[in-house]
Length: 423
Image 1 (cartoon, rainbow, N blue to C red):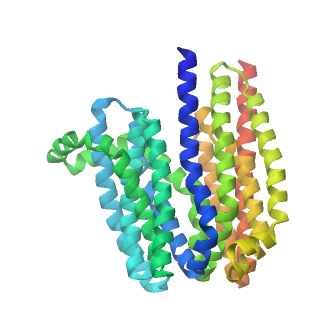
Image 2: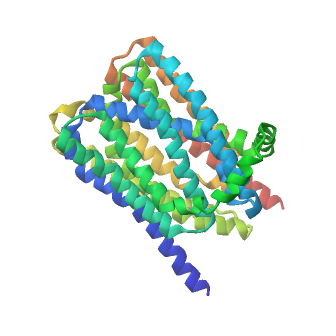
């Protein structure tokens, strides 16, 4: 019985990793075409759109969707209704704020602002479908959605770009194609609750909505705020660069990050999958867990060494890969590499606070990250740095913010071991 469960779990893990990895590999393979179809402005506009959606998503549903993983069945429809209502109310408020801010700074066109609004809603519904599928342990279906939605994100802008040439809207529509594909595959789980949701909606009172937000404040306040802070590495650089410079500079940063950051993300996820199972088992057995941490860090350090060598001596190959129009990417690639190595060293053990049920430490790390990246952006503004020097400073701050998390995890593990030995 245990062997069968182990086989099933292993199959699910590899399916999920494969579902994530194959679209990323396809993106890297098709990058020579994409980089010759779309310019820095297009990639920059898409990066700003993506960063805005990543920033908005935990605010729209206030991370209340995570409560679905542990709540009883009879409470699911009420939580779903609250999530959907929050998405509508808060997205409309964000649309008003975004249009007001953009009227002063004119960073984006109005159609992109509205696409950010709709993107936040679609992304939230897709996220809701994934969480519900997680609750039902539909791992194979989730893996299928990861694979097909990832393929849609890559193939749509590639085909549209070949036919109609450069337009940032094609990259953005690729995002929508991916999320809609995910909803089509996983949406049946959400539809199975639609009758109960409609019954709850008929009896809806705003006072009950407020009560539920307060009842789940661990998610709606602490969860959403910590997620926004932790995710700042995904949106602060892009939005900050767009504010200080232009979408084309964001495009340079975005493409450099895709080339080096995507492999780093996959490596981190693979080691983290190993760490989660081994470390959580040691914690359940009242062991220190130091063996799992040392193994994860050994893998991370070894891979980081060869990963660094690979990119340090492949600048000419990358330029040939992208085309001469992207020569500025080479100027910052080593600084992006510092971010990637910091990520590979840190992210494999990033679930440590959750396993120890010390999530507040992630909040401290998130606050530190916002402070470090915010200080770098402020320095760029005060010193009036040129575009490439600013990108280098921002990359250094981003890499340091990952290392701050690593220090926090070490501190947390030391406290855990001390308390364990005392008992």
